[in-house]
Image (cartoon, rainbow, N blue to C red; front, side, top):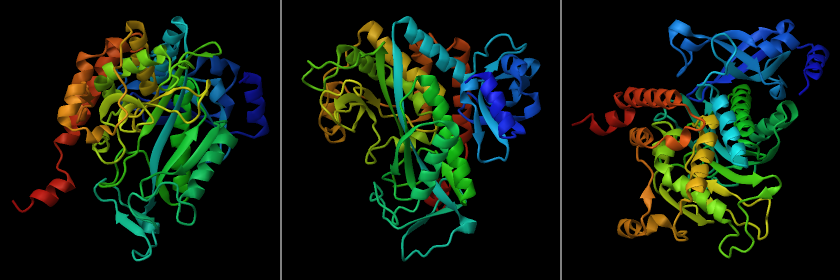
Length: 465
């Protein structure tokens, strides 16, 4: 967006405050707010020296912690949540403000796009973030005899959920059974009307207790990550206004569906979708796409540390809830980690692969970058993904899976971190060694902090021993 148009909009809308958004290595959105009179052409180019990197998870040491926030002009939006306030997503510059900060997740995604361009490709990606709306206990009014209600104690939330449907019956209900339709609709409309994020669809997901999914239009890795962070920001504020919370925790409720973030990808050369091949009898999928899939399967175990990056992520990746745990590929088979959608024959523009392990706790800048880099490594090395598996992999049995050479995703975050320690060269075109080492250190600390704590489930099971 042109700087003059932005300045004109600020004057016309009488904007008084500018919120500067950034994302840390963990994936958390942060915000600093400056007075609108400080924003002009010079400050837009120079950036704002407002960030103490030592206070942000995974960033700087206290000895050299001054970082600069430079607004990305195309992300300008006037937010409806704070009166007379506009927002920019920012690039982070290192101490002195002259060079990009290597641990800025957005910079990593920008570099991943550049790596693709050097190989002659551009990526088109989409994501399906799932999440839950939970009603606050203090405002909850319900009758257990008229609907499904649970207290979400195991997740550590002080909230209750009230839905008029039973577990495993949540997919696509219509109002009034779907009690969160208005929340999703308002989220989608704000995304479009205020932030310019095009929403393709929204619906209630399988999880009975208010599980939502909102799908935005496919975009480049960087822009899609921007949109996912904006979606989270909007959903949380919409929920707050209505007396709910929106949580992107992968598995908030025991014995109900977790929240995934299936990622769709295709690689293009100009106007040519390199993943499409009309002569392929199986799924109209090209050899380039097969090699891309090969890269995902080859690096899937280490990739888990980035796309399924929390201790809670591995409570979602268990059998019985449509979450994939086996590194195989197929068309239309949702038990495989990689699926080739085949809704329509001859769909040149829509031909893509779907990587199903990611969840919405992932840092989207890192996750989308790692996925395309793993796929690109498969293309460069011509990694064969093996034959597609068109049967329910869960029902094959362990012996048959071994015979077919089907690997399983890590069962814990610690296992995934250990895989990343030994398999990370494919990331290094965009992730520096410092970023990888810092990420691993942060995740090991996270694992330790949670693993050493006593959970309510342990008290429940073992208090009588």
